[in-house]
Each structure stands twice: as C-alpha cells, then as structure tokens.
Figure 1 (cartoon, rainbow, N blue to C red):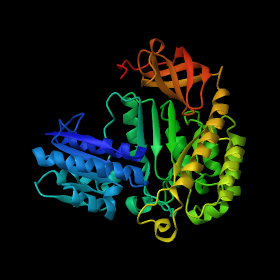
Figure 2 (cartoon, rainbow, N blue to C red):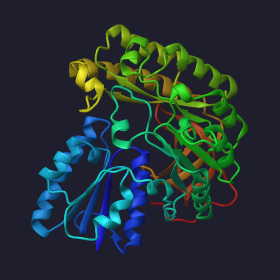
Figure 3 (cartoon, rainbow, N blue to C red):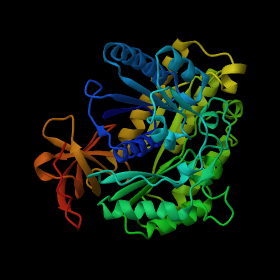
Figure 4 (cartoon, one colour):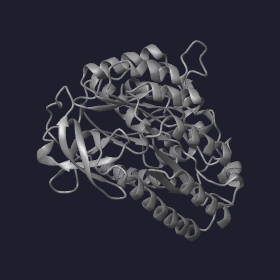
Amino acid sequence: MRAHIITFGCQMNEYDSHLVASELVSLGWELVESVEEADFVLVNTCAVRGKPVEKVRSLLGQLRKEKERRGLLIGLMGCLAQLDEGQQMARKFGVDVLLGPGALTSLPEALKGNERFWDLTFKEDLLDYIPPPPKGALSAHVTIIRGCNHHCTYCIVPTTRGPEVSRHPDLILKEIEQLKAAGVVEITLLGQNVNSYGKDQPGFPSFAELLRLVGRMGIPRVRFLTSHPVNFTDDIIQAIAETPAITRYIHLPVQSGSDRVLRRMAREYRRAHYLERIRRIREVLPDAVLSTDIIVGFPGETEEDFQETLSLYDEVGYDQAYMFIYSPRPGTPAYKHFQDLPREVKVERLQRLIEKQKEWSYRRNLEWVGKTVEVLVRGVAKEEGYVQGHDRGNHPVLVPAHQAPTPGLYQVVVKQATPHLLFGEVVGAREPAPIPLPVA
C-alpha cells in the first residue's frame, strides 16, 4: 500500500506530518511523491487563515474525483479537521479518515478496517511519541509543548489544539539525542507558545532551563518558535546570552502597534510592554535578529491605529516580518462579535506595510555585507548557479553552487544584500565536514 501526505500550515504541522509518516512506514506503507501513485492521501490542514482552508477545499474536490475514478482512500488531519467547518468538508467530499491534532496516534487503528474512522480526542500518548529522525536531514523540528492557554480573539488554535501541555523533558532530550546521532546540526524547538514550557507541570524545567539543557547537547544550532511577549521573560533572554548553541534569531509576534487594537485582540500586553521587551533584548543581545507577525486590518482598526503599527515598526526596526490581512475565522470571538473591514482597505494597508518591511529589511541586510556568517546550505536555489541556506539569524543566503557542492555548514562572507536575500562566498566549512548528501 502506498501513501502520500500533503501538508499545509506551520512548522508544527510539518512535525506532525513527519510523525504520521513514520507511523505509516512502521505499518508497512510506502511513501510516494504524488497523488497519482498513492492508495491513501492524507491532507494535514491549517485553520488559522482563510486562504489555506480554501486550498484544502479545492484539493478535497480533486481528491473526490480521483476517489470516484479508482477507489482512493482520503484522510484529513490537523486543525481544520477539529472544527465543524472541516468536518462538514469531510462529509461533503467523502473523507474516510478524520484525525484532530490530538489524535494522530490513532492512525494505525483508523487503517485497520474499511469503515469511516473519525477521532477528535486529545490523546496523552501523543506527548510520549518520539518519531524517528528524518532521513538525511540536517535540520529538524522538536515539539516541546502542544496547545495554547492564550485566547486571542482572532485565533482558533486554542479550540483546535486544546490547552497547553508540556512534553516530559527526558523525552525531548532523548529525541534530540537521536537527531544528533543521525547527523542533524540544527533543531527548532516548537510550540504555540514555547515560553510557557513547564508551567503546567510541577517539577519540569522552565523554558529558560530547557534552553540551557538543550544547548549543552552538542547540536551546533538551536532555534525556537513561537514566543509570546507576555511570557518572554528576562531569564529566557539571559539563557540565550549564556548558551552559544542558541541562535540569536528571535521571533516575537506583536500583531499591532495600537493599544486599542491589542485590547480588542485580547493580546494581554500593550505597546509599552512590548517595546520594553525589545529594549531588554537589544541590551543583552545586541546582535539579535528580530522578526515579528503583524495582522493588518483587524476589525475596528482605524487609520490612526494603523499608523501606530507603522511607527512601532520604525521604532523596533525589524529584520524580518510576516504580515497578513486579517482573515475572519468561524468559531473565534472576533468572527462572532466584530464587523470585518472592507477588503480594499486591508489590502491597501498591507501594501504600505510591505513597503515599510522592504525598507527596513534592506537596511538591516546591508549591515551584514562584509561580515562572515555560518550558513546551513540545504539545496539548490531558484537562482541558476546558486545553492541556498540560512544563517544563524534566519537570513536566506545564496552562494555559488560550486563552492558548496554538498549540504552542510559553511563559513560565508556576505558580498551583497537585497531586502530578502544575502549573497555570499564560501570561505570555509565547519568541522566536521558537510554531510555528503546530494543537493536536491
């Protein structure tokens, strides 16, 4: 039997897809590269914004036609599967297996019989599951906490993934040891709010303590996503400063620069608190690379509110930013209680913010020209003759392909910058030598 997995959404979904892929292999399934080759297609979904939901809807329509033609088995998992919206799609398009984000370990049971199988429970054994290392990978994700206790009015995640539950530190460290033994040189610790790690379990280390533990394990590069400004405390900043393996890339979503909008979002902090956290980061980690998330056009956002977001962007001077038009999601308080803004207003504001982002990213990227950075080269770039990787600050870096013939860690001198890319030349490889894998 052959299976194909299609993944939408965040790094957590990528991790979950790897988890179920390893389950399928253990059951004797062969993983294939296309729908046409597969007997079972499993779609891992995102429900945070409307666009990925529409992509899933379109894909399920195509899969239903394929099922009618040759008896394909269709599976739906992830955040959308946990919602009424996704379950209605599942009924409409003939989905056979439906698994919520907390029920992934039910996949073997789902595939035993020929009847439709749905499971939306949150299973404790999911926290104990350690997937095998991805084959030939130099970087990997490690989930440390699932769920979220914050209740932002625009966000469906607390509904789809449940409350915060931390994994046992021994399991996290064991998984990382296995990744290290498999040749992984970079790991990303994952959670909806990694800063809350350990708070739900007496006796567990704090997130800052976990960073120190992981940083001593011999993995050259350790990153983490995502943080919440309320929980990004001084001890976390200090742990980063004291632990060389922890990269200085900090993603700290702000969402808006307006206190009025932050209040409507139920973000639990205000502009002054956020800027104080940035000030402290800059003070202790002057070389930190900062990125953020910003939602444009949240219900009730005025031009004055948007100007406050633009001014905060200037005050912080972000290296990178992920910017989104507000997308009303059924089941959220904002969807129920707030009136959406006209799309043309949201699009126009987003364009202005994009211009701001380009200006600052270019300015920040120019500061790296002439400096030597460590780049994890992973494969061929879209630009002909180049391979692409990323440095410890998460900047995409391109180098001539002949200078980095195999994936791995290289020392690179930055020669040129654009708003979105750095171009450089290799001056050396980190010891041990790059893992001899074909660039693909």
